[in-house]
Image 1 (cartoon, one colour):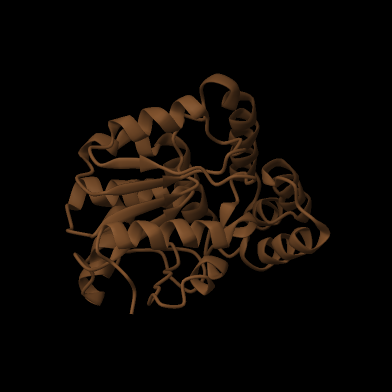
Image 2: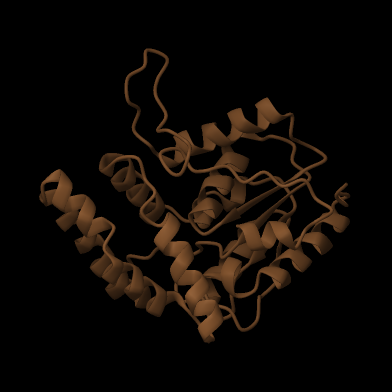
Length: 253
């Protein structure tokens, strides 16, 4: 999310790692035992972090891709008084239905196969450079060489940055079994949807349905972009977030 943060210099931006990724360890219960990583648990994590940082009515909450599901679940279940909710590349459609089904079936098979392999082989499979390249080709839209090189480097650095295979598989299940639509009607916040015009992980009908289900929803299409709007059109996303912030009374520092 660095490019979006860079394009919002007047804002103080917090970008936490998802639990079990990057520098953030998997979450554990009060007794120290491992806890299953579900959408509900991720929503609690957002609530705990917001409470710790003192965030609320004067702040915007932004999620990207799977983060749009997590942030939507948080907004629906915890009712924190954010100024507004912005959802970049929102997951609006059930991937196991319609035109998204073939691709989802392949991804499901990939994760199921990774579970059958021994730990070392399974991790090698999950961090495969070939899989990363397939992801780049599948999700990229109109990339020039400079952007292609940048995205490849970002994925090389961070795509395999999970702490353990079980956490990764649980987060995959959470990301593939829910959409923003599951929580939209319960979100009592001004909400801005920012899908890429060529996002192949959503449909026009899905986006419109979510917008209409949101009590205070609005939709702004990011032209010339696919699902990876945070790489492809970060300035446009930041511009939309800034405009939305002004509408809901947040203007940055």
